[in-house]
Length: 87
Ligand code: FES
Image (cartoon, rainbow, N blue to C red; front, top):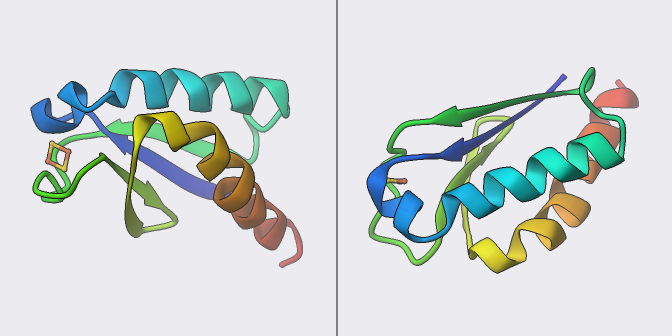
């Protein structure tokens, strides 16, 4: 199972966290990954000072611009899912 979280703290909310969540939900649906990705919202990840929305992928913190959500999912999340499947 791949663990994916998006910060919904106030700073990340202002930087577009809702759009990131919506994009990820759409892509999880599109790729039929409900059984393979544990997706959740999380509170402040202490990354507010960085430009972008806080994300955690299998425990690794990242910060992404809201408009990069689709690319991040396609490049990093799908790779993590494939790596999980290969285990
Ligand atoms: S509000 Fe998202 S990292 Fe602090």
